[in-house]
View 1 (cartoon, rainbow, N blue to C red):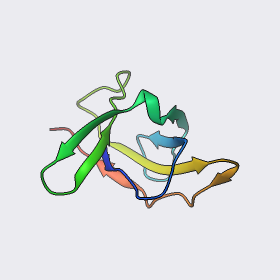
View 2 (cartoon, one colour):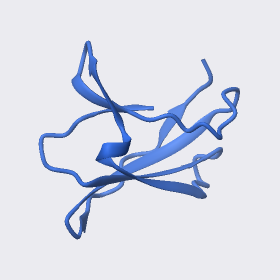
View 3 (cartoon, rainbow, N blue to C red):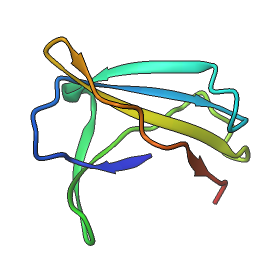
View 4 (cartoon, one colour):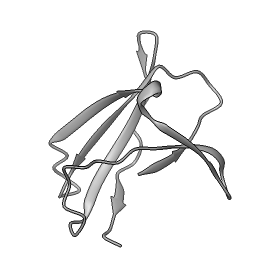
Length: 84
């Protein structure tokens, strides 16, 4: 999964995911230092992270939120990631 690097400071991200849009029953919290950075041709600087335990043939649903200090952002909308 890839996402644009925000303008405001972020300490970590929480990704909630699952195989149904209404059942995001797994989550992972990642420090910014654990993420790969790359230059997206459309969006500019971006982060990338691979969920290795996921079957690449399954559709995945996820939300993402950011943490800075003691504050947590609102969760994103639910994104659908289809197999390639």
